[in-house]
Image (cartoon, rainbow, N blue to C red; front, side, top):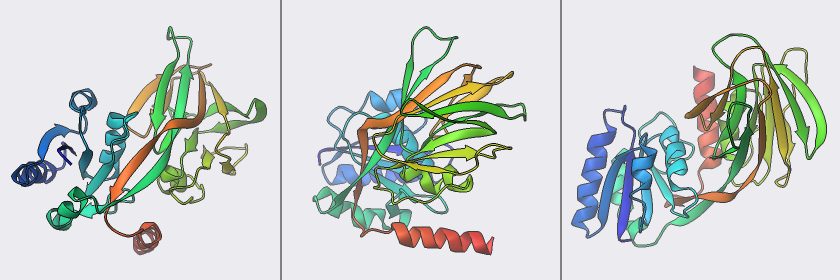
Length: 278
Protein backbone atom coordinates (compact mmCIF):
# COMPACT_ATOMS: atom_id res chain seq x y z
CA UNK A 1 0.00 0.00 0.00
CA UNK A 2 1.26 3.44 -0.94
CA UNK A 3 -1.51 5.83 0.16
CA UNK A 4 -3.98 5.61 3.07
CA UNK A 5 -6.76 8.00 4.04
CA UNK A 6 -7.73 8.47 7.70
CA UNK A 7 -11.26 9.65 8.51
CA UNK A 8 -11.87 10.59 12.14
CA UNK A 9 -14.96 11.44 14.20
CA UNK A 10 -14.71 15.21 14.82
CA UNK A 11 -16.63 15.15 18.11
CA UNK A 12 -14.69 12.32 19.76
CA UNK A 13 -11.81 13.92 21.69
CA UNK A 14 -9.62 10.85 21.30
CA UNK A 15 -10.12 10.52 17.54
CA UNK A 16 -8.00 13.33 16.11
CA UNK A 17 -4.90 12.69 18.27
CA UNK A 18 -5.04 9.01 17.33
CA UNK A 19 -5.48 9.90 13.65
CA UNK A 20 -2.46 12.21 13.77
CA UNK A 21 -0.40 9.53 15.50
CA UNK A 22 -1.34 6.96 12.86
CA UNK A 23 -0.48 9.38 10.07
CA UNK A 24 3.03 9.76 11.50
CA UNK A 25 3.28 6.01 12.06
CA UNK A 26 2.40 5.28 8.43
CA UNK A 27 4.68 7.95 7.00
CA UNK A 28 7.56 6.53 9.02
CA UNK A 29 6.96 3.28 7.14
CA UNK A 30 7.02 5.03 3.77
CA UNK A 31 3.25 5.14 3.29
CA UNK A 32 1.62 8.42 2.27
CA UNK A 33 -1.35 9.35 4.49
CA UNK A 34 -4.00 12.05 4.58
CA UNK A 35 -6.44 13.15 7.30
CA UNK A 36 -9.98 14.44 7.12
CA UNK A 37 -13.04 14.75 9.34
CA UNK A 38 -15.53 12.00 8.49
CA UNK A 39 -18.21 14.69 8.43
CA UNK A 40 -16.58 16.50 5.47
CA UNK A 41 -17.47 14.04 2.73
CA UNK A 42 -16.73 16.30 -0.23
CA UNK A 43 -13.32 17.25 1.17
CA UNK A 44 -12.48 13.60 1.79
CA UNK A 45 -13.74 12.50 -1.62
CA UNK A 46 -11.42 14.99 -3.29
CA UNK A 47 -8.42 13.15 -1.82
CA UNK A 48 -9.40 9.62 -2.87
CA UNK A 49 -7.29 9.35 -6.02
CA UNK A 50 -4.81 6.48 -5.68
CA UNK A 51 -5.88 5.81 -2.09
CA UNK A 52 -5.45 2.11 -1.25
CA UNK A 53 -7.25 1.99 2.12
CA UNK A 54 -9.46 4.11 4.36
CA UNK A 55 -8.91 3.93 8.11
CA UNK A 56 -11.81 5.21 10.20
CA UNK A 57 -11.31 6.42 13.76
CA UNK A 58 -14.55 6.35 15.74
CA UNK A 59 -17.37 3.82 15.65
CA UNK A 60 -19.87 2.33 13.24
CA UNK A 61 -21.31 5.77 12.49
CA UNK A 62 -17.91 6.92 11.24
CA UNK A 63 -17.78 3.89 8.95
CA UNK A 64 -21.20 4.77 7.50
CA UNK A 65 -19.86 8.20 6.56
CA UNK A 66 -16.73 6.61 5.10
CA UNK A 67 -18.94 4.38 2.96
CA UNK A 68 -20.61 7.47 1.51
CA UNK A 69 -17.16 8.89 0.73
CA UNK A 70 -15.76 5.87 -1.11
CA UNK A 71 -18.79 4.76 -3.18
CA UNK A 72 -18.50 3.81 -6.03
CA UNK A 73 -14.73 3.29 -5.72
CA UNK A 74 -13.70 -0.22 -4.50
CA UNK A 75 -11.46 1.19 -1.77
CA UNK A 76 -11.57 -1.02 1.35
CA UNK A 77 -12.25 0.33 4.85
CA UNK A 78 -10.70 -0.71 8.15
CA UNK A 79 -12.40 0.66 11.25
CA UNK A 80 -10.64 1.54 14.49
CA UNK A 81 -13.14 1.41 17.34
CA UNK A 82 -13.43 4.20 19.87
CA UNK A 83 -17.06 3.42 20.68
CA UNK A 84 -18.72 0.98 23.07
CA UNK A 85 -19.30 -1.83 20.58
CA UNK A 86 -18.50 -1.77 16.89
CA UNK A 87 -20.15 -4.38 14.67
CA UNK A 88 -18.30 -3.06 11.63
CA UNK A 89 -15.04 -1.86 13.16
CA UNK A 90 -12.04 -4.18 13.10
CA UNK A 91 -9.35 -2.88 15.45
CA UNK A 92 -9.25 -1.48 18.96
CA UNK A 93 -7.18 1.66 19.49
CA UNK A 94 -4.66 -0.19 21.67
CA UNK A 95 -3.84 -2.76 18.97
CA UNK A 96 -3.92 -0.69 15.81
CA UNK A 97 -0.14 -0.08 15.53
CA UNK A 98 0.64 -3.76 16.08
CA UNK A 99 -1.92 -4.98 13.51
CA UNK A 100 -1.47 -2.35 10.80
CA UNK A 101 1.87 -3.73 9.51
CA UNK A 102 0.19 -7.04 8.69
CA UNK A 103 -2.54 -5.24 6.74
CA UNK A 104 0.08 -3.21 4.89
CA UNK A 105 1.84 -6.45 4.01
CA UNK A 106 -1.31 -7.86 2.40
CA UNK A 107 -2.18 -10.39 5.11
CA UNK A 108 -5.77 -9.27 5.64
CA UNK A 109 -9.01 -10.56 4.10
CA UNK A 110 -11.88 -8.75 2.40
CA UNK A 111 -15.37 -8.73 3.91
CA UNK A 112 -17.79 -7.59 1.18
CA UNK A 113 -21.18 -6.08 2.08
CA UNK A 114 -24.27 -5.30 0.02
CA UNK A 115 -25.72 -1.80 -0.17
CA UNK A 116 -29.11 -0.34 -1.06
CA UNK A 117 -29.89 2.16 -3.79
CA UNK A 118 -32.73 4.61 -3.17
CA UNK A 119 -34.40 6.86 -5.73
CA UNK A 120 -36.39 9.82 -4.37
CA UNK A 121 -39.07 11.42 -6.53
CA UNK A 122 -40.93 14.38 -5.01
CA UNK A 123 -43.03 17.25 -6.30
CA UNK A 124 -40.72 19.84 -4.72
CA UNK A 125 -37.66 18.78 -6.73
CA UNK A 126 -36.95 19.04 -10.43
CA UNK A 127 -35.35 15.62 -10.91
CA UNK A 128 -35.00 12.33 -9.04
CA UNK A 129 -32.27 12.08 -6.41
CA UNK A 130 -30.21 8.96 -5.79
CA UNK A 131 -28.64 7.65 -2.60
CA UNK A 132 -26.67 4.58 -1.53
CA UNK A 133 -27.01 3.11 1.97
CA UNK A 134 -24.88 0.59 3.81
CA UNK A 135 -27.30 0.33 6.76
CA UNK A 136 -30.80 1.55 6.00
CA UNK A 137 -33.24 3.82 4.21
CA UNK A 138 -35.93 5.20 6.54
CA UNK A 139 -39.15 7.09 5.79
CA UNK A 140 -40.48 8.47 9.05
CA UNK A 141 -42.43 11.20 10.76
CA UNK A 142 -40.64 14.50 11.33
CA UNK A 143 -40.74 16.80 14.35
CA UNK A 144 -44.49 16.45 14.85
CA UNK A 145 -45.32 13.31 16.83
CA UNK A 146 -48.02 11.99 14.53
CA UNK A 147 -48.08 8.84 12.44
CA UNK A 148 -47.55 8.86 8.70
CA UNK A 149 -49.14 6.62 6.06
CA UNK A 150 -46.82 4.70 3.77
CA UNK A 151 -48.16 2.78 0.77
CA UNK A 152 -45.76 -0.09 0.14
CA UNK A 153 -45.49 -2.28 -2.92
CA UNK A 154 -43.05 -5.06 -3.77
CA UNK A 155 -42.12 -5.71 -7.39
CA UNK A 156 -45.09 -3.56 -8.48
CA UNK A 157 -47.53 -5.61 -6.39
CA UNK A 158 -49.33 -3.67 -3.62
CA UNK A 159 -48.39 -4.93 -0.17
CA UNK A 160 -49.90 -2.73 2.54
CA UNK A 161 -50.52 0.77 3.80
CA UNK A 162 -48.55 1.23 6.98
CA UNK A 163 -49.90 3.62 9.59
CA UNK A 164 -46.80 4.06 11.72
CA UNK A 165 -43.95 6.24 12.86
CA UNK A 166 -42.28 5.13 9.65
CA UNK A 167 -41.03 2.31 7.46
CA UNK A 168 -37.45 1.13 7.06
CA UNK A 169 -35.61 -0.82 4.39
CA UNK A 170 -32.45 -2.33 5.87
CA UNK A 171 -29.46 -4.24 4.55
CA UNK A 172 -28.14 -7.31 6.32
CA UNK A 173 -25.40 -5.08 7.74
CA UNK A 174 -28.04 -2.72 9.12
CA UNK A 175 -30.10 -5.54 10.62
CA UNK A 176 -28.21 -5.24 13.93
CA UNK A 177 -28.92 -1.50 14.19
CA UNK A 178 -32.16 0.48 13.98
CA UNK A 179 -33.92 -2.43 12.26
CA UNK A 180 -33.25 -4.69 15.26
CA UNK A 181 -34.54 -2.02 17.65
CA UNK A 182 -37.70 -1.80 15.53
CA UNK A 183 -38.31 -5.54 15.89
CA UNK A 184 -36.63 -6.88 12.78
CA UNK A 185 -34.61 -10.11 12.57
CA UNK A 186 -30.83 -10.33 12.50
CA UNK A 187 -29.27 -11.38 9.19
CA UNK A 188 -25.69 -12.46 8.68
CA UNK A 189 -23.92 -9.30 7.46
CA UNK A 190 -22.86 -10.88 4.16
CA UNK A 191 -26.38 -12.05 3.31
CA UNK A 192 -27.82 -10.67 0.06
CA UNK A 193 -31.39 -10.46 1.39
CA UNK A 194 -32.70 -7.24 2.90
CA UNK A 195 -35.50 -6.21 5.26
CA UNK A 196 -38.71 -4.20 5.18
CA UNK A 197 -39.53 -3.16 8.76
CA UNK A 198 -42.45 -1.01 10.01
CA UNK A 199 -41.59 1.37 12.85
CA UNK A 200 -44.14 1.40 15.68
CA UNK A 201 -47.13 0.52 13.48
CA UNK A 202 -50.62 1.35 14.73
CA UNK A 203 -53.47 -0.92 13.60
CA UNK A 204 -51.54 -1.91 10.48
CA UNK A 205 -49.16 -4.78 9.54
CA UNK A 206 -46.49 -5.14 12.22
CA UNK A 207 -44.25 -7.91 10.89
CA UNK A 208 -40.85 -7.38 9.33
CA UNK A 209 -40.28 -9.02 5.94
CA UNK A 210 -37.11 -10.64 4.63
CA UNK A 211 -36.89 -9.91 0.91
CA UNK A 212 -34.87 -11.57 -1.87
CA UNK A 213 -31.92 -9.66 -3.27
CA UNK A 214 -33.61 -8.80 -6.59
CA UNK A 215 -36.70 -7.28 -4.96
CA UNK A 216 -37.73 -3.69 -5.71
CA UNK A 217 -39.60 -1.88 -2.92
CA UNK A 218 -41.69 1.21 -3.66
CA UNK A 219 -42.76 3.43 -0.77
CA UNK A 220 -45.13 6.39 -1.12
CA UNK A 221 -45.62 8.59 1.92
CA UNK A 222 -48.88 10.37 2.73
CA UNK A 223 -49.00 12.93 5.50
CA UNK A 224 -50.46 16.32 6.38
CA UNK A 225 -47.15 17.41 7.87
CA UNK A 226 -43.49 17.13 6.91
CA UNK A 227 -41.90 13.73 7.13
CA UNK A 228 -38.23 12.74 6.88
CA UNK A 229 -36.07 10.59 4.63
CA UNK A 230 -32.99 9.29 6.42
CA UNK A 231 -30.10 7.53 4.69
CA UNK A 232 -27.78 5.69 7.10
CA UNK A 233 -28.82 8.10 9.86
CA UNK A 234 -26.66 11.01 8.67
CA UNK A 235 -28.34 12.19 5.45
CA UNK A 236 -31.70 13.58 6.54
CA UNK A 237 -34.10 15.34 4.17
CA UNK A 238 -37.63 16.75 4.56
CA UNK A 239 -40.14 14.56 2.75
CA UNK A 240 -43.38 16.08 1.43
CA UNK A 241 -46.62 14.15 1.10
CA UNK A 242 -46.76 12.15 -2.11
CA UNK A 243 -43.01 11.60 -2.28
CA UNK A 244 -42.00 8.19 -3.63
CA UNK A 245 -38.86 6.33 -2.60
CA UNK A 246 -37.90 3.26 -4.61
CA UNK A 247 -35.35 0.97 -2.97
CA UNK A 248 -33.40 -1.93 -4.45
CA UNK A 249 -29.97 -3.51 -4.30
CA UNK A 250 -27.17 -1.11 -5.18
CA UNK A 251 -24.68 -2.16 -7.87
CA UNK A 252 -21.99 -1.00 -5.42
CA UNK A 253 -20.58 -2.92 -2.48
CA UNK A 254 -18.54 -1.88 0.53
CA UNK A 255 -15.37 -3.82 1.28
CA UNK A 256 -13.88 -4.09 4.75
CA UNK A 257 -10.24 -5.07 5.05
CA UNK A 258 -9.92 -7.27 8.12
CA UNK A 259 -7.10 -9.00 9.99
CA UNK A 260 -9.04 -10.85 12.70
CA UNK A 261 -11.07 -13.99 12.15
CA UNK A 262 -14.84 -13.65 11.79
CA UNK A 263 -16.27 -12.10 14.98
CA UNK A 264 -19.88 -11.34 14.09
CA UNK A 265 -21.58 -13.91 16.32
CA UNK A 266 -19.26 -13.15 19.22
CA UNK A 267 -20.05 -9.44 18.89
CA UNK A 268 -23.76 -10.20 18.65
CA UNK A 269 -23.67 -12.33 21.79
CA UNK A 270 -21.72 -9.63 23.62
CA UNK A 271 -24.23 -6.96 22.66
CA UNK A 272 -27.16 -9.05 23.89
CA UNK A 273 -25.38 -9.66 27.19
CA UNK A 274 -24.78 -5.93 27.64
CA UNK A 275 -28.44 -5.21 26.90
CA UNK A 276 -29.54 -7.76 29.49
CA UNK A 277 -27.23 -6.19 32.09
CA UNK A 278 -28.50 -2.68 31.30
